[in-house]
Structure formats: structure tokens, C-alpha cells
Amino acid sequence: MLYLVGLGLSSEEDITVRGLKAVKKSCRVYLEHYTSILMAASQEELEKFYEKPVILADREMVETGCDEILRDADKQDVAFLVVGDPFGATTHTDLVLRAKQQGISVEVIHNASIMNAVGACGLQLYTFGQTVSMVFFTENWRPDSWYEKILENRKIGLHTLVLLDIKVKEQNYENMARGRLIYEPPRYMSISQCCEQLLEVDESKGTKAYTADTPCVAISRLGCPTQRMKSGTIKELSGYDAGEPLHSLVILGRQCHELELEYLLEFCDDRRKFKQDVLRDQEYFKPAPWVPPAEEEDE
Ligand SMILES: C[S@@+](CC[C@H](N)C(=O)[O-])C[C@H]1O[C@@H](n2cnc3c(N)ncnc32)[C@H](O)[C@@H]1O
Picture 1 (cartoon, rainbow, N blue to C red):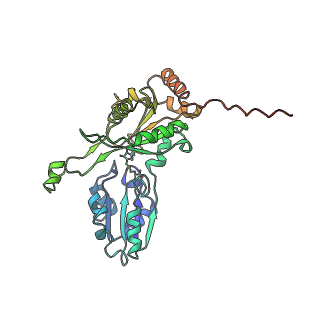
Picture 2: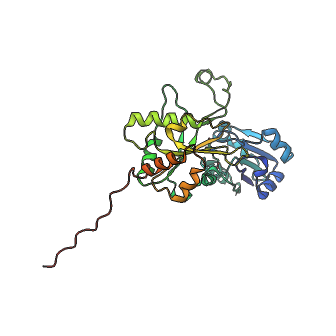
Picture 3: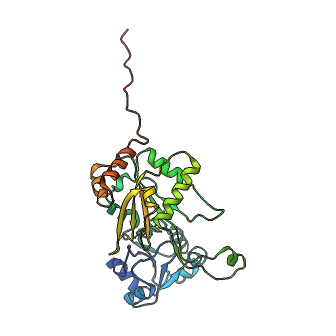
């Protein structure tokens, strides 16, 4: 059996009882190690907790070398651990399909994900639109396909969850070109960098999917004892120090309910100003009032 086990958001103890049982009976345990990190537990701490070795699976191993992960999984139990939920944000459907093609049974054991725990900021999950990913801009690579998705969400009043890039084991161009297996130190995008990139792209587009005054909520280390939320405009959050990773951002949509607003006010510096920013933002993309069609007059 191949077990895909969600680890939850923060510590080694966030695994479910069913997930832990699967790990205990597996002969090999892999930890997916490129889309997220378990913030409060290292590889060594996991190994101590599970009482067995944990193999780090980088992008290369999962995407091109998954035969090694699946080796003998038709005869033995193998666990593939994913921080959050195995199908939250990055899905691991490719691994599941390959296992099935090889006649290997698969069991998925779910857990909390950023995709649902984000509700902790007080915004209703029901009123979120498309989630987008913000990648690190480089000098000549500044992808902005997320912009249209934010625009679509904002036009129909929905909130946007922005997931931020992480680079856990990346080579620089020179090392990649020369085939040298030398990796850069891990990097995690911060809230302030994300907000700066948002502002840069909005300026170049001019479509005004959002502005510097659009209200947002910054979420750091969700599920950790050091979890922090901060509500403010994009401009304000571009100067905010959210501390250690991981960070996510939510850009508010027009349909901000008064209870949602009341919750967000707990996380801002200036309640009066933030309330005004939200009320002003609700006018943005507001559809024209509906006017019933004129009834046809009787002849
Ligand atoms: C590609 S997603 C992987 C999501 C994961 N599989 C899950 O289900 O939660 C990783 C990104 O989600 C966001 N994220 C994940 N966990 C987070 C947390 N606990 N607090 C804040 N942001 C988080 C960060 O932006 C991070 O770079």
C-alpha cells in the first residue's frame, strides 16, 4: 500500500492517529520537501517521533524519480508524507496515478491544510475565489498570470488567498548549467515582498484589479504557537515584518460581511482607518443596481 499522509500545519504531533498508524507500519517513509515545511519540527524530530528514518523527497525525486518511492509498494507499506493535506494546494495526483498504473493500492489520510485553516483569519471560506501563487521575481522573469485571477475574484466580490513562493532546494543558473549539484540556501517569500510585487504589477497593468489601498490580511505561521495575523492595506503590509516563515496573504473581496470585518479589526493598527478602507473597497466593482425591465404596455 502507498499511504499519502497529511501532516497538518505545524508540529510532529499534528499528524492524525490514522496517519501515525500508517507511518508506524511502513517500511519506508518519505517526506515531501519542496512545496511546504513543517515549521515546528525538523527531520530529526520527526524521526525521533516516528522511531524510524525519514527520507527527504525533493522535487526531482517526486517528479522524475518516483519509481524509487513506489518500489515494492505492491508488497510492502510505503508512506509519503505531505505537510498540510496531500491534496491541499499542490496536489500529488501524479504520484497516485503512477502507483495505480503499477497496480499499487493507495490510501490517502487527510489533515488540515492552509486551504481550510485560512478561515482562522475570520473570513468565510465560502466567499473565497481562486487561490493564486506568487513566485519570486527575478531580473528577467516576472510572471503575472495570477493578476487576471485576482481581477476575476474581485469583480465578483470574492476574497483571494495568495500562497507565497518557497525555494527549499534550488540550484542557481550557473550551477544548473554546469550540472553541479550545489544548492542555494532555502528562501521563503515574505508578506512585504509579496505586497511589493503586487504593487509593481498593478502599476504596469493599470487595470486596477486592486490598489495600494485595498485591504488584506497577512497570515504568518498559521497553526504554530507563534501564529500572527495582521490586517492592513497592501501599501501598509508592504512595510510589515511578519517574522519567520511561512506566510500567506488574503486580498479582500467586496462581499466582506460585518462579522468578518469585526474579526479583522482585531488584527489592525488603526481600527477606524481599516474600517473606512474596507467600506471604500466595497464600492469597488460594485455592480450597478438592478432595474427591472419595463413592462410592456397593454395595447
Ligand atoms: C504550495 S502550498 C502547500 C500547501 C500544503 N500542502 C497544505 O495543504 O497546507 C505552500 C504555501 O502555502 C502557504 N502556507 C502553508 N502553510 C502555511 C502556514 N501554516 N501558515 C501560513 N502560510 C502557509 C505558504 O504561502 C506556503 O509557501
